[in-house]
Image (cartoon, rainbow, N blue to C red):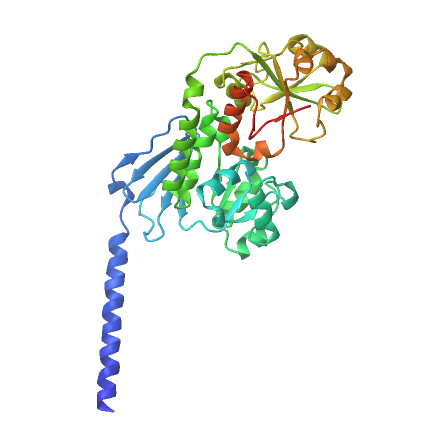
Length: 377
């Protein structure tokens, strides 16, 4: 009995000692953020709406020059004296609510899709096979669109982060409610990048957030290496139109400053119509014009690309002419230079370099197996 008593006391003392050491260790780990110096600034080649600075083991993320987040590693404590305007993101962010559909492809490509547990897009509206499968298997649950999140589900299942696009600014109450419930909201601004490949470079952010930095960086550098020579080549002088016909018979085109228009230019083409100004100072990348005006501007375009993003109802040139018989007059229709871009292209952010390569091949007359375009017969 005496030996047993001594053993119990010894165990208790050892446990107490361990607890004190752990407590001391925890106190040591809780440092003052003001005392940490900046140790590195992440280099971005094209992205300008995003900056990331390292402070030792911590990462300070700034989006659009205004929203700041401090990424805290799982094995580190939140520092003291973090500025009030900085939102804490504590890893692991393994129960993320993804509302911005364009981000899924980047996260999937970085190998971090397991961190997405909630979606703002329904299963039937995804064109990324892995996202569709994950929702079918229940690995990702639908948690409502940006304007009406399923707060109960998100709280019940301990959502760790919401990634939104700027549409959330139209519903500020939804953003505020998520934050009140303890769910940090990161509003991505990749759509505001002036260089189209800046959108692709946002993969670096998701690599850092989800501990896939090496994979994300390698992917980005490899994809850029594939198109650097194309971007440095001379213009072909050929004109390209990118559009679709609305249900009212008007033609929806991309503004000259839109990323699609810029990718066409980077590939060596000349986007038309080019005389359109960014009327109305807004973030809309498209505008509608009367068919007569489109006809006058794009009749002699060397290449026309139909945007099948909404309905996917133009399968061939016959379908195009059925939209408006005047398409039969177009030079590109007569020469067989009519192409289509499908719905999946707009959710597959990583396809931008494929689109650039496809456009360049078309401009050079080397039709072949395309990744993001389909030639119409």
